[in-house]
Image (cartoon, rainbow, N blue to C red; front, side, top):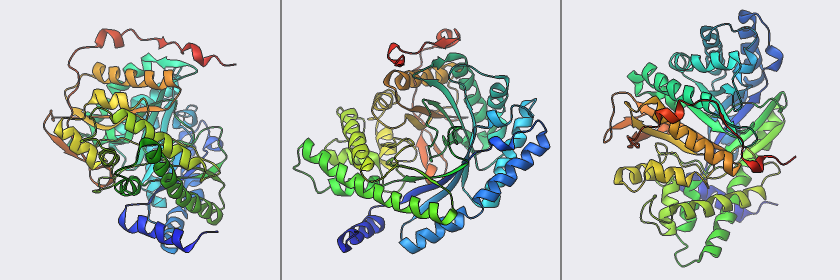
Length: 454
């Protein structure tokens, strides 16, 4: 039974510590939409999405008002479009029409993002995969709400280095296509290793082929809550500190579980998972970097940061799995630069570098997220950064990702503004030594020996 004190405590977290449910995401399978007629395919996709998700925004708003819990975003994820469009799409332009259909469906349903303009190419590319990938710059430039993700590696298969090379070029091209808006197209494009099928967070959400026809996934947040609790823990040792974080994560996740079950009941769609990731925002105090400072670090990036993140991530998972029947997605702590004011401050102060962020991704939920770099960064350098991050994910059997923004016309010392939850970012320097010959080798980096577990 929920006690009065628990209700009071939750209200305090909502009112003063930026606790919210970051997103309710409906995952929708489009497998039954497949046809070799492009016009019919687009019609099938639009009709299915708008039929299943037509009450999502209203239901989310109603739950938020009735329970007093802010539900910031309502989103949709769909089956990777490279699989759905393969029979009908003969050119990249054909795939762009599907992106526009997804965008139209997003506008009709009122969601802020729709994910799944995706391809899974960790071992190799089909013709349809390559057509979709080459269509991404136009697709993201000519839509507002569509998000794209590409999976380039997996522990069981290795890393597709042909895909890594191509995605470096595609990220550069996407930046150029959207340069009039600070290359924002790249903020809606992420590359993965070991991408999960049930992630509710953008830009990486897609509906896995092993999922049900439709599913409800919820993503919670709460860095501000953890920061507030730790601000009263000056004298605790690490064991006591870990216990405090674990208990706090439990409380945060219970809120997500409540909302997920209620949304499932009202929409008549099965409950999938709660993603218990600590997802920061540009709001003051809602920051992963601020948590590090409460632990005793002068700035994020100082020696000890990776250890602090490792403990935070692990305790969030330990607390969360006790609070929900089904935990999935990414689940842990996000470290995006542009979406976290504390991380922005650390980058501007020089304590946080891309190399330090890469080290931190060995122990956090995702990877190099929302990092703005100079617009003249070579495509091969972007590919090299991607390859490094894919290797971390592959070897450690975890999800890693890269969302880099080579902001056209910007250099180190400049800033780029994206607005809303995407925030703003300082342009961070990248290593100037070339990896072009390395990336140019192509082929596939083999899976590690510990992948063979049959």
